Image (cartoon, rainbow, N blue to C red; front, side):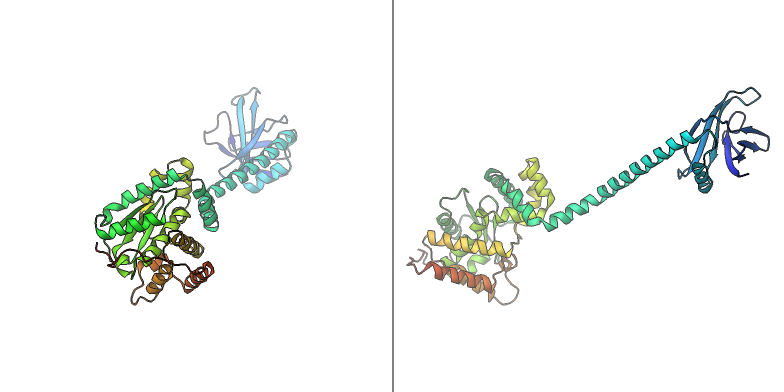
Length: 365
């Protein structure tokens, strides 16, 4: 005869229950002060215990007798003993135990689904970051293709306004006027209204802001040996705007926040501060640099400007001693790029070019 240790709740017993012994075969439940019997007619059965490994059998006793009438519950909390009860239910209780088994399977399924959903939720940021890393170029291109020119210009204007307090603009002198003249010549017919700005800064650098803003440092202007070399730099920077390299690069650097800003319709408002931080240090892929070189060379030819200035200036920078110019860190002028430019120029054939009409070079700020 199998005896199972259990806890009994019922009329006249302590609220916390009473330890007892349950004889499985006879159904007799006994404790120090009394005894009762598990009815042959099934009551209710459910899981019990903090770990939900136990089992509780509950029934309503209508028999007469002091303390007998009322609701009783028998809890078997030891996992091993509860498992044996589930495997061989008491007589008359098989049907409710079968329903319990089905409910347990359903709960396990819901629990597994819940844990899976929680793990997916916790892993989702990592998966999104990994997915963006693997598909960054494609996603940035996709997002940029859905930005209108008007939105791009608004982003560029807002970002440039955010960075202006850190720039020593010199837009009133002779050099700034030359910059604007060459820029206007290179951008005729563009969908963008270009603005060219000169910044007093000794570093050799230039960068393009989405929407048609090109910024040139005075150190770069001083490093050029002819107006054709400056025109080559401008043509290259302009093509980063025309080909939307600047916009794509910002979206790639800012990641999913840029895609969300585009989707929410507040591109300029959401990205202005972040974009301004990255604008002066945009880095382009090798393919983007070669594409800007090639398109820039075509722009120089259309404007009637000798394109030889472009590879000449990059060669000058490449030979610079000491720390490399800032321009080389963002626009690395590799030998392969210069060779590609030379081959493209040769394929275009020789053209007569009038020298640009600037006698004194470089012009004064």
